[in-house]
Length: 136
Image (cartoon, rainbow, N blue to C red):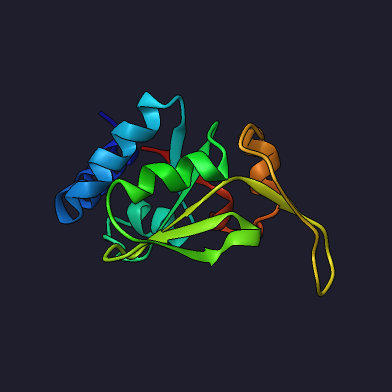
């Protein structure tokens, strides 16, 4: 196993150890036909061998409503940014989002697309490490 693969395996293992419900949520998402990617600063931290407590997940192939229904099985769900496709489960420092594209400007037009490909979804992110994801 390469160093990178070891870092990723360790990171996902720490997430599921510190937040056992994440493993159950991942399993439920996969059973419903979805796919989960760890995105954002947690990816950078993971690649540096550091555990991040600020987790961002992007969920593919499930609608916003389907994702919400899954998360509700595990507790109270908050709409962090409903128009941006972002949900948060009480007690877990993690955002769960549907892939989206944003128009430019002060009041961007947001379009959620659960079947968007990774390349398209990551285009809205800046050109730093935030444009990377780890398939959990």
